[in-house]
Image (cartoon, rainbow, N blue to C red):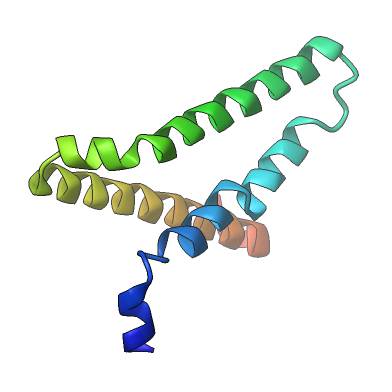
Length: 108
């Protein structure tokens, strides 16, 4: 396994990035925004938002090696820690929402 991994490029991006971009959170967000909206303008606004995010994601991935070369090691560590903090905040919020839904009698 170690010898095989030395021959290949970094494979950690695909398993980590794809579920976050097109995972259950993304699908649930789109599903929660679209039901019951018969107004075509509202549906069009959702579609435009999805397209904008897809274009931004494409450019971020496309120019990621350039961005990494321009950023130093310190800046990359700061961005990595900041993203980890944001992920932790979202996780705590989701846990809180789940507990609130499971035990509404304890929440005031």
